[in-house]
Image (cartoon, rainbow, N blue to C red; front, side, top):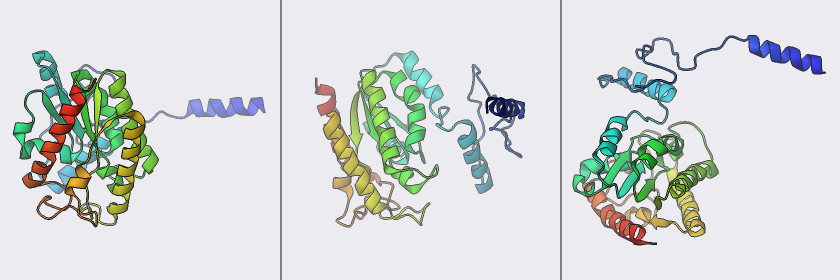
Length: 266
């Protein structure tokens, strides 16, 4: 039995190693891999659908968390020594917020949303995009893209666990946590087979429970934005998912009130 295990182990050792990031036809094949000083080369933005598909493949295989997105801005912010009050961590709903309401992101409020991201991707970049900036608090809004399946299948418990892990990391580093409810959506234009209403409600129920157990502050955007059926209220989203300026105007006072409560709390 032992000899058989040893032979099997030797067979495994003899297998050729393959670089998982090598994809035939990848135009970014010359980019650095491994542990390097400058891991974020600059590429021109894609100009067509095929280019964007290649870019998405590159992100999923080489920069899953998209740490390169804010790397330069993070370095500039740290070098400036400007105090950071709150980092907003999230997906496109956070990413788009600064474009719709740039005035909110002043006085130490920093936007670190990335369109399309799921909770495992946010967890990967949480240290660089949140902890390293040494904010007083973090605002976490996530879950939409996990339900849409942007990076594959998951479970409600895994998604909630990723959010809880981000909260744990923050508090372990002296950063207070504002957890935002996942905004409503009756359907996803990019993932039309999904029926998100019950899953968004379920995820928000888990968030309520987590905040109760861990004494976190919950920002209830869902309640302010949703119809009785679980869709976005008319006029508050451009596509049923992403808020319009009017939608962000509803969210803004809720965010500011949560920040006041959280940053002032002992």
